[in-house]
Length: 155
Image 1 (cartoon, rainbow, N blue to C red):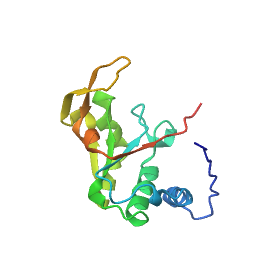
Image 2: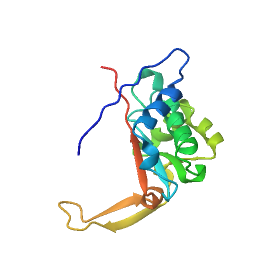
Image 3: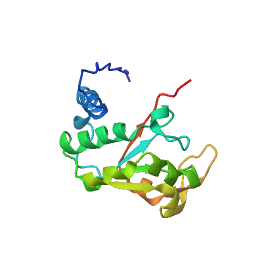
Image 4: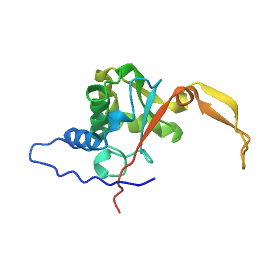
């Protein structure tokens, strides 16, 4: 598979969301992800409980640009879009709160902490190399698409 890198020049007056939408239009993501998806999970890179303006975690503006694109350009029903995170156990909710991710619920999407989600135990892995089974959050198991959103880190 060939990789492509897109460089989008920010114009005066462009918001962070505008830049994200311009980048996604270049791909074009709406030809890859359609409203036929069961659930689309957007997984930000929240590796620590930090404010996004530090550059250590994905910004809410970036997530909002993706949500706007999925709804307005790819015609995805908002109820199919879920911003998820988990794994940091007791800090996931805090990270969501300090980065004001819940403001994105105004689009009709769901915000979900997988640490508190219903867990499905004992999912068998075919031809395992190490783990023969895993436990997984029900929301993740029901998804047909996961968008992992990286964050460039400060040195």
